[in-house]
Figure 1 (tube, rainbow, N blue to C red):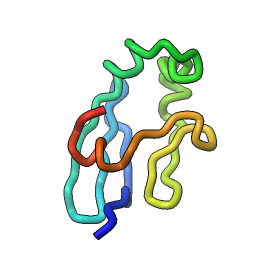
Figure 2 (figure 1 turned 180 degrees about the vertical axis):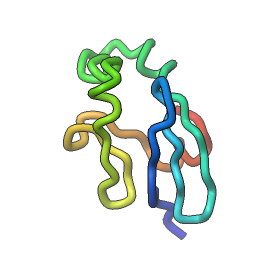
Figure 3 (figure 1 turned 120 degrees about the vertical axis):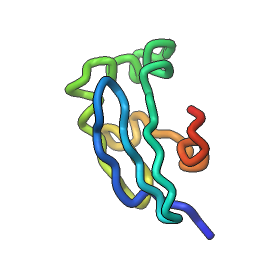
Figure 4 (figure 1 turned 90 degrees about the vertical axis):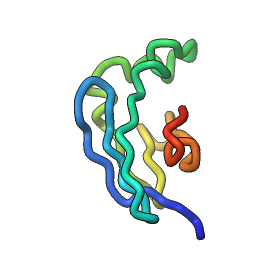
Length: 80
């Protein structure tokens, strides 16, 4: 069974509650990834306004037309 993201809700300070198609829910904290990112395209999402501007497309969470995205299975496991 392919797992997809069905819904995502911003919580606080780079944390997003992600709901998966298999019923699993995870609060994912992206702050460590963003604070340690070397790529300027990723670091721009330290601006919380930019970070909050995500969308769910084809079961994946993306920022700015796939400028930043993560493997669904990693998110499902809580490891990014």
